[in-house]
Length: 309
Image (cartoon, rainbow, N blue to C red):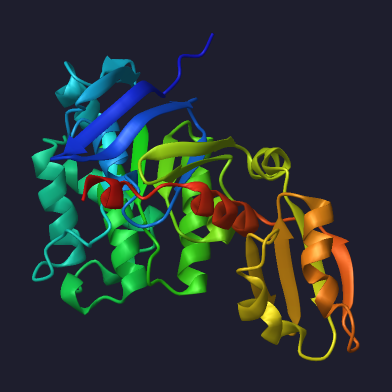
């Protein structure tokens, strides 16, 4: 039987009176891409750092890459690549110099050959002598990923890696992530983009320290129990602000010239929109989206920052 790459139970991390990670369980098999989603301040980064050995949990237990996350942290760090939210390489060095520096930190043999291979794989070879400070966000992203995989890790932890990157660069990045996963590398990636979440093999949704949903995108949508309606017609997209606070509706958003609303009870949802079914508006049932589910879950979550105040 294959051993999970990540298998943690009851992870807890506190800062003062605030519990930023509250008994989180996470199990990911090798070669899988798991999207880690949640609002800002929900404990995603803290969880990533506990899993890879950069932070010691205040509670809980588990193993990562076969090693204990508390007593064998150095062994985990040696086999993990961690890409932080902010670009962390030296902007006054060239692309090659940055990769050579990282390679020396890992004491890699055949450093020149290893760096050459990373440059080719990430499409950086023609820019290898360019100063890093002059790179666009997309090229910096490629360099950061190259540095993460230079030592051939078994696990990649990516913390909002595509924030501020154009769609073409994001697609190229995700193509590379799937290629790495196909080679057996496990990937845990935090993101705010719903299209990126849907490209993951599975998703974990955390809100204010608590894990609230786990599974594939289809499984999470099915388990939500939400109903959705779509309105078309004159001014449909302008109704969202008026509908959001009506009982029975948990989310209302405009998509182009249409309006999308959802709620946990189908009958209550139809009752909520009943006053708006005239004036040329046409309503029909639709499937809820992943975004609908996450907005619904966020509405049910309790902000742990307010509880600690």
